Amino acid sequence: MMKQIIHHFNNSKNILLAAHVDPDGDSVGSLTALGLSLESLGKKITLYSESAIPAVYRFLPASDRIVRTINGLNGCDVAVILDCSNIDRVGKAASTIKQIPEIINIDHHTTNTNFGTIQLIDTWACATAEIVYRIIKNIGVRITKAIATSIYTGILTDTGSFRFSNTNESAFAICKEMVEYGVDPSYVAEHVYGPFSLGRLKLLNRALDSLEISATGKLSIMTLTRDVFEKTNTHPEDTDGFLNYARNIKDIKVAALIQHQLNGNRTEEPVSENCYHVSLRSDGTVDVAAIASAFGGGGHRNAAGFSTELTISEIKSKLLKLAETI
Ligand code: AMP
Ligand code: MN
Ligand code: MN
Image (tube, rainbow, N blue to C red; front, top):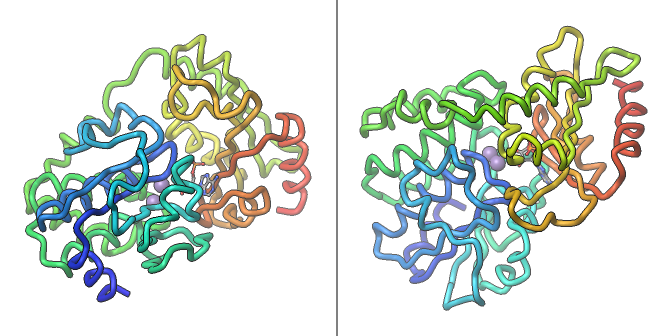
């Protein structure tokens, strides 16, 4: 697979790279790392993300070159889909992208559907950025500080700063190497985890206030509706990390956060008036990817999510019913 991918990259001229909607550090970092690498080989690249890039990742090199719309195929001969368990995770452009002759699926989700013409899926990789690193090494790109910063950020954020169960030996080995290429860990941490708005703290307050625990004591549910985001002047991306509090409560096995889906940017029309995004985190004893899949979503064993048009009370009652079995 690696050989085939490198062959396609070498023979292509015009490559579209895409991240998933509501991108996280891994999908933005993988996008900019691979994009800059392919550009250094003389390829024309288009970096695509339907949702706005969260403010905390805008320090990433080339993140200002990420476009939110594509007009037709523009002569692209290869598409690279990063960190997406299915192709629809790229958003509305999926139907256009599907027409690109070669679609390379690079991912680490257990629920990946094997879409595309070539797949490089490693569910043991700590992040998609780890797989991107291997490609870059194999293709013989010179790793610049900009590329290194992108890879480092992808691994740092997807491993929860080397705390989650996907933290493997390569996470440390690759990050060590990226520091040798000039990455400044404190600079990255300042941006990713650095100062945040008062509104975000108020949003956290509202999220914690909304916390409910199932009768079994094993499931916690937090809920954030659109009006709360409006009142606190915050965005969906501001909820990043909130679930860690709920998951760390003693005896909790699964933590859920239900939030109005606002398409990553509060100034835009919501995807649909009553669409919710549900994030799930597990303590390691429950496979939340399986739960998310049952709702049409996906993810990893310990971190998964889905979007739904069910009402809040329907979502809650379904989750509570599930809680009786965990
Ligand atoms: P989140 O719900 O955004 O906290 O995401 C947790 C994990 O689940 C990430 O690895 C996402 O890529 C994945 N995920 C979230 N929503 C979906 C979805 N609708 N379909 C497939 N995977 C998802
Ligand atoms: Mn991701
Ligand atoms: Mn990832």
